[in-house]
Amino acid sequence: MIPPEFLSDIATQQGVSKSELAALKLGLAGYSTADIGEQLGISGDAARKRLSEVYQKFGIAGRGPVKLTKLQQLLVTRYQEALANGRVAFNSAESEQVDWGNAPDVSVFYGRTAELAKLEQWIIQDHYRLLAIYGISGIGKTTLSVKLTQRLQPHFKKVFWRSLYYAPLLQDLLIELTTFLHGSPLDFPVTVVSEQMDWVMDYLQHHRCLLVLNGLESFSRKGDLAGNYQPNYENYSQFIHLLGTVPHQSCVVTTSQEKLSEVAYLEGQTLPVGSFKLRGLELEEAKAILQNKGLTGEDKWKYLVDGYRGNPMMLKLVAETIKEVFGGNVSDFLDTSFFTRDIHNFIERIFDRVSGLERRILYILSDQSDGLAFKQLQNQLTNVNAQDLMSALSSLRQRSLIEHMDQGFILPLVIKEVTQQIMASEA
Image 1 (cartoon, rainbow, N blue to C red):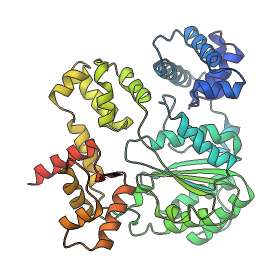
Image 2 (cartoon, rainbow, N blue to C red):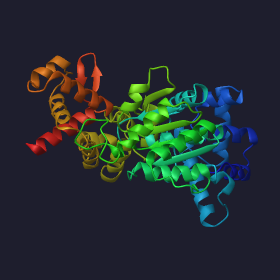
Image 3 (cartoon, rainbow, N blue to C red):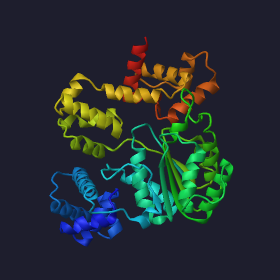
């Protein structure tokens, strides 16, 4: 993350005016030109003109969102150089209020204007105390959560962002959290998880804090339905339930590949609790990734983006192969294939999480040109009772592996193709 002081200094050096800097800060935070105009009390065209002046002063060429991406990359490079040369230092006063853990740098960020606005509304205006962001792997949950946290930071006394990728036990996570919130290790023994949770809940009730827990799928039991925890991690479910049911003035944001069953149960009960499914990038936003990768054959980009459902990580993976093998020409790649080994491995890692019944359903759906209704699936799974089938279908939807259309359940193209490849390898 680029500190605002550094951004102001480097912008001043480039001759950027205060009004242009204000527009730039909002643009880097993910606001559209229309939203920038609304925030600054000017028209969208005026906001676009201010950003255009900024690009010129930094010597940024190109068009559309690519210019902002190039500027973000330039600013990150300048900041890293300044850090390496000792010309800037971290703000210790600010660091006492914010613990970013191992949050990634999201200075280069694509789109998500509408998503950020919606989430910000839920948290700031509607005072949600628990909000779960979920979506398939690679869809951009982590970068969105960091960008959202940056935008929300001024509204909270303390901010705590943690990746749960390495699956810490809850008591270990709570030791880090209580130490941060208290300002130092607690001076009384807190060895029982229930006592740690009680202390955290009391603090959140009396102080407005933002906690972001990224990657709760790390605790899911592989080979089982979504929502089932590994042994020794079941108390995370209790903690999430407390965060949603006990009144407090803070906000906890979680991200996961699966929709959290605890949140699904609580939302819709007039509680300030909700879930948000993150979908793929819009076409123009996704095109910015391909353009930034230097790809050609723009007339085929829409087909590529649609096939990968706008998944940023998948698009970056396939773009790298297209660049290395086909000189960046998308048309040449599509004449040969639509999927790469990287994509196959990427999807296969997701498949490792599903249950045996879920896998059988995926195999059946991958062989269909049209969708299948519930009763049609029942007819092909005669040894499976209706309750188990409903649970498996619900789990697959929570994992974003299937979709429900008018014609029934279907697989997205990328999931369908890889499923067929996995079936062929197992035959």
